[in-house]
Amino acid sequence: MRFLLFPLALASATVAHAAPPQLILEVARFRNLDQVQKGGEIEISVTVPTQPLTYRQRAPKSFQSSAVVDLDILKADGTSAWHETVTLKPPVLNDTTISIKNPLSFLKRVTVPDGTYTLRGKVRDQYKATNGETVVEQQLVVSAPKKPEFSDIVFLSKPAVKTTGESVFNRGGYLLTRAPGGYYGRGTEGLYFYTELNQLPAGRPVTVHYHLAAPDGTATDADAAAVTPAVGRPTSLAGELPLGYLPAGPFTLTIEARDAATKKVLATQSRAGERSLTEYAPAGAGGLR
Image 1 (cartoon, rainbow, N blue to C red):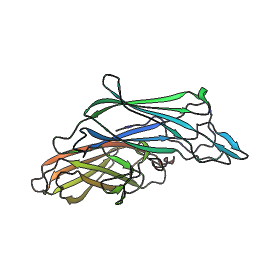
Image 2 (cartoon, rainbow, N blue to C red):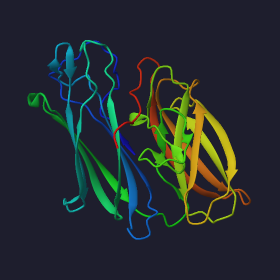
Image 3 (cartoon, rainbow, N blue to C red):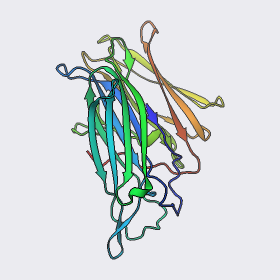
């Protein structure tokens, strides 16, 4: 699931500081493995471009901006299920006229009971309140899988990396670097992604098919090696497809799982993304736990 609030053109040399701060907010839902705390696990990815922020002088030739992000998960009756406030301070710059100021991203992992929620993100410029604030909301339905189904698809800015470490950026044995807003910019030739397949019969091989398509009919298909589900755990799937042939604009990735023996379709999942041939993409989430 995603909400892309603004065009991701991050390379302009001048930005009017009167503009409100910007926000990319997206969430991916996963099966919760905690047998005590029932519900679903969601990952909230937040990216704040720093170009529109006000830079305050900290010392001679030393400038820094600051943004405050409020995150809320609201129940259907409007009461709070979860809240957190994060203050973002990007690295100090000695020249605020540089053309690219790297966006700041962070990731939060939250478990909530099954139900319908509203995810709300609000960002404001800490150093200039008159710039206003930006609020993004999206509906969120959390439910435990009762039959074979995929988790949400996570788009990555680079290939998933096998790891044994413990981190909010790790899932299913992989280190994942999110592509903010599902956006792939200039110079990017590969689409990288991760998802999990749940509630499969243990020990029965499953084949996985990928279909990547643009609205003009441009498309490609690929098959992953067959996987054999483990008992009681999701099956992690990390993949990549070439982007070079796709035109600029929206695209859709669809993943399909079939029983290897009967060829019966067990589950499908899709996610839309965006590709640009002229603008660079923001950096992937990292650095803040």
